[in-house]
Amino acid sequence: MSDSSAIEWTDATWNPVRGCKKVSPGCKHCYAETFAERWRGIPGHPYEHGFDLRLVPHKLNDPFTWTRSRRIFVNSMSDLHQDEVPESFVTSVYQVMLKADWHIYQVLTKRAERMRQFVQAHDAELDLRKNPHIWLGVSVEDKKYGMPRIAHLRDIPAAVRFLSIEPLLEHLGPIDLSGIDWVIVGGESGPGAREMREEWVTSILEQCREQQVQFFFKQWGGVQKGKHGRELGGRVYDEFPSIQTGTAPRSAAARRRLHVIYDGLTAR
Ligand code: SF4
Image 1 (spheres, rainbow, N blue to C red):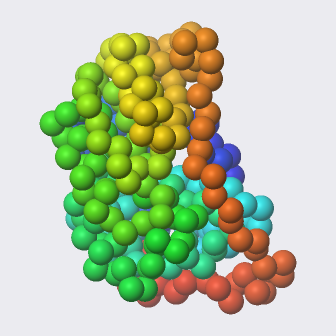
Image 2 (image 1 turned 30 degrees about the horizontal axis):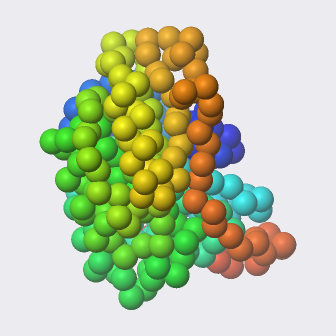
């Protein structure tokens, strides 16, 4: 867990799962894979197994250690809803999010169908419509792989749904944003970054305005991202859904009593 993040739309990251497998063109230059593979074979490093999938049960309760409310990107180094993560572990992650409700959680997946199936199957205990501090989102990079994820997301019983349209790889055309609360758009960055055209971005902005959806422009990207900044048409778009969160119990003992126990696989 990191108490800060360079990702513009979040405050912190929490990774009770590490590692992932590529599923679509948006994964081509996965920053998480590049970072994780750098440490493969270094004994004792959290990523000594590179980008191989691993559960990290000892990280489960980390959100209870932060008393100040934060926006937390859940599994910035993985994808919680990939098939290989046992349902019991996914359930534990959601239990932590429900109990440590003074934070906002941003759960982003490319496995939209599995997220939908999981939340629908556990709707009675999760009741995400009444828990607006848990935001569910899908990645949308293109028409073929990304756009179908939106329909799955819309069918999920949740209070806040969002799209991360990054890396935006082509003009998406008309997008049905009904049931969507927030849209992030960004271009790819780093070596080999693929092009993103301004008209693709302004088309999404206009559709957000027409359909009353909050819009966040993350970055132009490019091989040297710092050179291009994040202004669109001369301004920065930093909009978020407006959500009230709870407050943390003041005593550490009270927070510890909320801890979630996971006694399945223990991977370290
Ligand atoms: S789904 Fe996300 S974390 Fe997994 S490989 Fe693709 S970009 Fe990387």
